Amino acid sequence: MITSSFFMSDLMVNHNPFIDHIINKVYYCDISALPNGLESQKGKELLPFVKLIDKFEAICHDIANDDVVFTFRTNKDAPKYKLVRVDLKEPSTWTEVLQETEKDVLESAIAVNGDQMVMSNLSDVKHVLQKRNLERGALLHHLPIEIGSVYDVFVPSKDGTKIPMFIVAKKDIVLDGSHPCLLYAYGGFNISLSPTFSVCRIVLARHLGAVYCIANICGGGEYGEEWHKAGSLAKKQNCFDDFISAAEYLVSAGDT
Image (cartoon, rainbow, N blue to C red; front, side, top):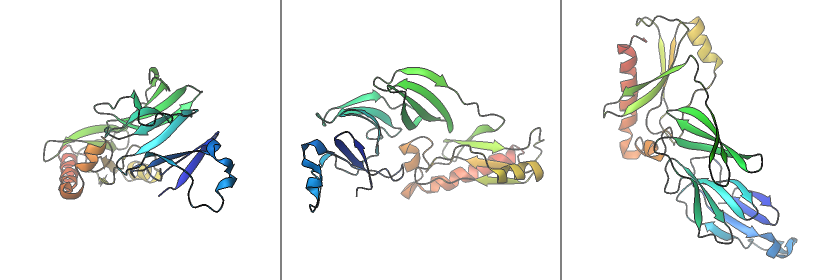
């Protein structure tokens, strides 16, 4: 199903980017090839779309275009995502602009300043920003974001997998096992839980002396599609094992 579109000079590209974990198709139409533009299609069922991607097998989002040359972010054959360029005049030829990395997940890329892009990579559940050349993918500038006073640990799960967990507590708190603790996790639908500000959590930590923890159990998108599948369907038990391991760690470390 086509749910959105954008126009670029005489070209219209349609795709389905409703939410990031939904796979999509990509079609395009050369409007200049129509005798009287879109007016000539009134009363007709479909535009003469060319099917650039006609299978629901991966996510493919447009980043930018230079005339008919498009840059896409996709997880096709790259569970942690990569950037590719395709010339719509040669739609079968795809060129990698930026290869998939071994660990970090390419969460987003935005075209800026004409020939550049700002990328957000998820590295151990922390966002790292980079500015790169749009056409070649060359690194221009690295923008580290310090995580501040919130800290993270890696908890070994039942099968030995290292589970990242963020811990938030009042500054200078003495972790002697006497504090209440709220442990939260999600572990589903390829959704990543990264640090965000919350008034409720501040109240818990500052006024109630509580420790707030987010366990990034498998099933989410923190380490790409493999991490998602490790907590899905027949492997769903891994999510519960991860959560239990996180709780046991907090008790043994004196957080609660």
